[in-house]
Length: 273
Ligand SMILES: Nc1ncnc2c1ncn2[C@@H]1O[C@H](COP(=O)(O)OP(=O)(O)OP(=O)(O)O)[C@@H](O)[C@H]1O
Ligand SMILES: [Mg+2]
Image (cartoon, rainbow, N blue to C red; front, side):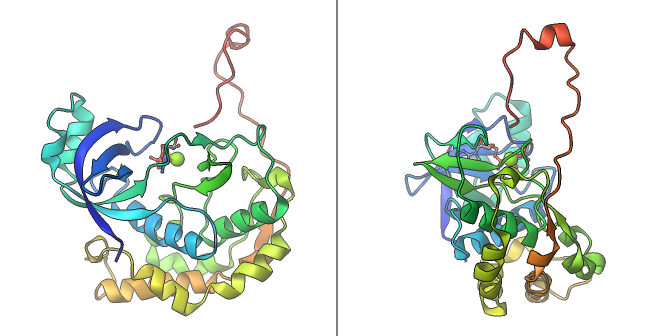
């Protein structure tokens, strides 16, 4: 199991997140980014955060600590925003907390240099978990104390939304052309040689055991959470040879801005969130 805390204060919503994550304080005096079971994307997002995040950590990549975070919706009563109120009301019980990295900033590929070995490890890992959510449009990488930290794995392992088709995903190619680290010459051979042997049944069993039982209950087609955990293990194990299937080509061009040209020149350029 993950370490567990109880939220004691809802601080503020994180507006840049699509799922309306919130910053909370907890009874261990920590501050966490909380992702809610009641969010539209559903609890599978939280399962993906735990499986992918804890796997990344064990492969030596930096991920802020993940905790189970108990929520009593009463802590949001003073929150004026109706949307937040409803989200909290729908999310009583166990949610996901990620250690908040104070003073971190979003990774900007124009402002930082990333070494090819580290870029290779991250791209390889994203291929393993079918992550299309670390692009130059939406890097989901933070810079904190001059190091790169991986966040936001909620949209990974897309195959767990359709288990009957999951096995076919093992063989799928991974197009990293739009990956935010594509331009840093990621050393994919070094990454595959280092990381693929670490992705063992034993490691994956350890990682999937961390997912709270209640987020795995009642999945159609599965006898129970144990069987579902084994399905995640099998799917990820089958993809450990992904190194041969990663391609990096030219980036897809930026879509034309909907802001009229005469106005765009007046506006400061906004980076993708
Ligand atoms: N641990 C953290 N420490 C500091 N800031 C964070 C942390 N986690 C997330 N953030 C900030 O909150 C934003 C939203 O978080 P995240 O990307 O995980 O949410 P999301 O709802 O899945 O977002 P989206 O789907 O829109 O990318 C991040 O882009 C980042 O700016
Ligand atoms: Mg994000």
